[in-house]
Amino acid sequence: MSSTERTRVCVVGGGPAGMVLGLLLARGGIDVVVLEKHGDFLRDFRGDTVHSSTLTLLDELGLGEAFARVPHRLVDQLGVILDSGPVRLGDMRRLPGPHKHIAFVPQWDFLDLLARAGAEEPCFTLRMRTEATGLVREGGRVAGVRYRTEEGETGELRADLVVACDGRSSVLRAAAGLRAREFGVPMDVWWFRLPRHEGNIAGAGGRFGGGRALVLIDRGEYYQCAFLIRKGTDAALRARGIESFRQGLADLIPWLADRVDHVRSWDDVKLLDVRLDRLPRWHTDGLLCVGDAAHAMSPIGGVGINLAVQDAVAAARLLAEPLRRGRVTGRDLAKVQLRRWLPTAVTQTVQRLIHRGLLDRALSGRISVVNRTRPPRVVRLLQRFPRLQVVPAYLFGVGLLPEHAPDFARRTPASAPR
Image 1 (cartoon, one colour):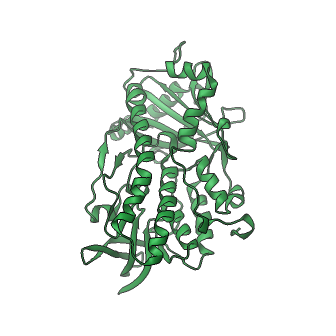
Image 2 (cartoon, one colour):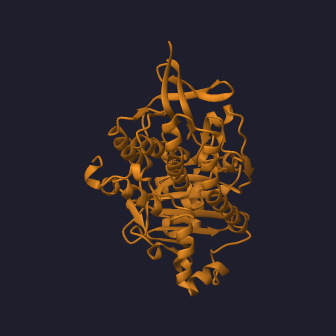
Image 3 (cartoon, one colour):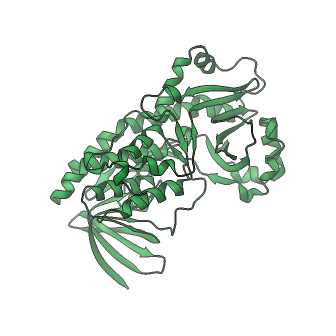
């Protein structure tokens, strides 16, 4: 049975960008409906990094104390593992502001926190198990979305503005005919977990050698591991068998040899098809794309969540008043892209340089920090001048243009939901 409803803003996608945008607009008195196709947020190996500037945003929204009660791990350094031991490359302790660290937290806990905050706002509606299937057009502009529930019910939700927060495979972006510019990437990523023992290295670090690369993210009792492989080689490498994979881990970081059997089968190893792209134009009349729908990021630095959240904050601040007037123009939407284009483009450029200058060479066996007595030049520079370690820390922990909550969305901890 089909039905037609109406709201001021329809946000498609209940990820970090969609939930933050929905919450902020609702606090501004704007009716907003967030559509999320899944029944919960429980999806493993999604982006779990909450950066310093996002933690500051949570404080401004009155959610800092609630976040502190969510199980999480704080990391204040980034580094690489050499034969001589771990070496720090980024020092978060040198960052300005109250949060001199980044937080690793399961994304579902972060999204549940935002959902609870949204539920306190009368203008906020979250519809789970509801998938946007296409766009509704009227008079040459986007006027809403078509949706289908998990039970098979269909309908239309009309809106003054539709915001695509449905990720790098955005259905709405494709329906609008918006095409992204693709940037080549040298790798895909295998995600898995290994136990972390008392006294093992803390923080986050990477190890490169023999055409292999592994990143360890300290999650307290375990490491969230990212094993980098050449782009498109997943099937061929899996065909070699799980024992070959375990041996590769042990060869790369010998002190992990006593726990590689915790990867019982390939079912424990999840593939991330890495993409890096950006829309030349993030909007069309009645539709705005933000987050991964506008610019898919490499997992380098874990910056995807941070940029998506910053997009959402900028969109809420710049569009709240036009939405209250009942008319959002193309010029209004262009202001969001103009605001967020530079930090997005610069961050992606840095990621591309890391891809080309380090990861492509490392995965091809042309560069290694395994069995080397002399570390790469950039490592030596950051060790000789420790104050320079604030540069990578700031770029990845804060970002080029951090956004702050608009006044209408700010709350004190006492007034925020618990």
